[in-house]
Image (cartoon, rainbow, N blue to C red):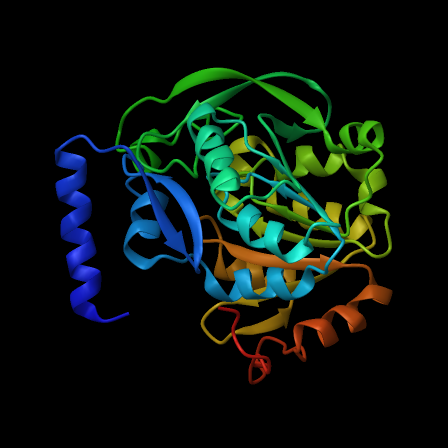
Length: 307
């Protein structure tokens, strides 16, 4: 993106906020998306750059096949839901979970703006069991709402205490069982509550054809009350092989937990793609990628970027 355009959008962002504009419709990766300009982090990023983590988005699109059932955990305003809704086509299905009322309203508007009748939006968090829960809201990053009180507001919420709202939580195994759905791909980004969600999707994870995209954020995991190693162990116990998505080199790297923990002792995060060993070869062929390892030259993407 030209520097002048980036600067112009940054100026416009400030001006629109100053006059009280809240939600706006933009095009992100060529698709309509509703965003909230009060979101000083993810909303601002979408407004300026019109994309987010583009290599991971490319991989998700490549891994998603026509007719597939996809689950989006932590859908936010629908960035990936919209992309994947178009990819699965009219014979496929996307089920998107977003617990925050504001994000959920924009998610539904984004889905409607794209004419995606194959997307089901659920205003709920995914955890180990179906119940009521509290959602603690960030005022500066609407992608950092959490189902736990992290007590790190000085760093992550501009020093302000978080407000909370009551929400619905569901077990993914229970939800999918009632709906009669078997997903081929799950994307999970739920701000440190991943181990709880994994506990409620053991049956789903046993599907040998499943592909799981998820985030490793040690700070969030610890604030939830889980050691990062337990998160990795839960994935491995589910029989999954783990690969790290490297945005900078546009490559996949085999995960060595000790090396990953050393790189991200507390803050910082990594995005992972996980699948059963028998699925890995087919997945990598679909993605057009070999696999590199830390300490080796990265294995770069061979396929062109999605547009």
